[in-house]
Image (cartoon, rainbow, N blue to C red; front, side, top):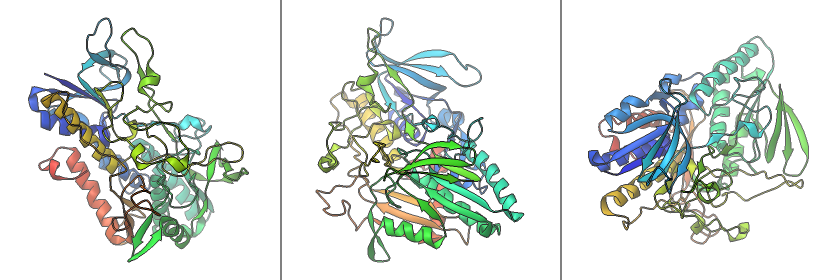
Length: 489
């Protein structure tokens, strides 16, 4: 019997574990190690953050689902990986620390034949002083990165709305809280859902909405922007986004690195090297992502973390990490199999793998401060990668170590995104966009880097219906309900 250990129970990890368990059956063991007791459909957290959904609407208990799927579930966090074993272990193993109430603080060494690192990110609030999810002393902003964060954000937002109803002018600031953030899309959705809810509550005239982002232009989204078909015409995402912001009376500050947050005020540096301040009554700023801090050790106990992981804490895979100027970046730099080049029984999926470089053009202020979005690896790409990696591991287990590895390069992968701009059965709106490929390939598609026949976008009520349906569809799938394998990533 072989054992596959999956670190993380998010989109990538949950997808990898559930498919692997189905394909391997009872002859082999699949173990999921995650500190969370519940699964969270993160794309809907923005609706929780405006009070249109509850925590229960976007989460469910993992234990019964993994029991149904024949998966061993350990509510714990991974601490260190030992790919060579040690004096006590002939096999590879991972050290975990339990977080569940029954065993909290206890450690265990779990041996494995194969390991998939799908831990996701550390929400690096500490990168910017004063940035937080709002519940700790010294946190001056809120977050929608987790369901609990979003519940807290909704309560704080309601206080702002209550003041606006009394005639008090309120200022809301939404965006990114550091110059190296990703996930601009979540903040994009949140600001327009706030705008929508403010109109419904009759307080829009008393609320000033402002966007602040590390993007060099609106619509960059960490992908260097894109050109897409809208209504039969090819337009840039910059024009698409600027029009949306202007139509909804949302002002913006772009190319900004938020370097400090105080009560009611952010301090930022712009790409041109100047510094500024912006006041607020309510702020939701996405934190930068980092690796979760896993360590790696050789058989003799020496630290090999730098061999297994990149400096940002994400796991090295089959990418080209050779430092090179932006002009020499290629689509072929990006990983295909997500296998660690040093230890062939280690794989990474979703946010946990180290990209070879960012996708947007790297930029620095004259002061030397990097201000550019980092690559998005969430949602659909995470699911696709998780499934491909699980397929590879299953083949290695059942067919032998020379089995062909499955590929899922983001430079050959299309993705669909449905960005909510307001929830409502008859007045909701969402921007439905597809992009192919996610990582631009300027050799194959000169000029735009993408195939405009498969890169398009529309905004409207139909998009909202699609997002609402997808919410229920993906939770249905994640619960392993009948026919779950038929639902695409």
